[in-house]
Image (cartoon, rainbow, N blue to C red; front, side):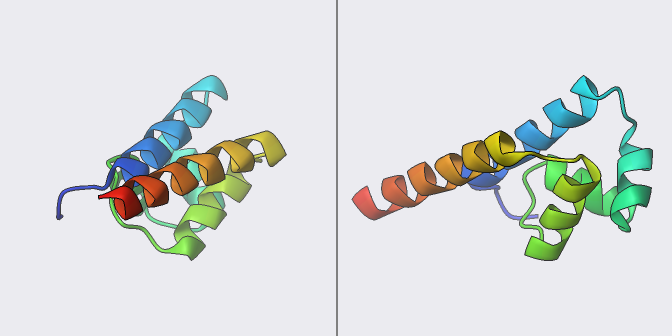
Length: 85
């Protein structure tokens, strides 16, 4: 795995917190999302996951508008930092 971007690390941490807050296991989230546990762990570590994987996990976690807004804000900030060099 290449070094994760700051955004991917933030996304992984947000997803991890959602799992913990809901008292879920990684295995149960992965099964509900229709992905492997290793694919979920890759996402949690900041791996460059597909949009399908990310959305399936967020759906399995019943992510709401505030969760999605926060993720988008993280992404926008990361893009701005990249543009600023």
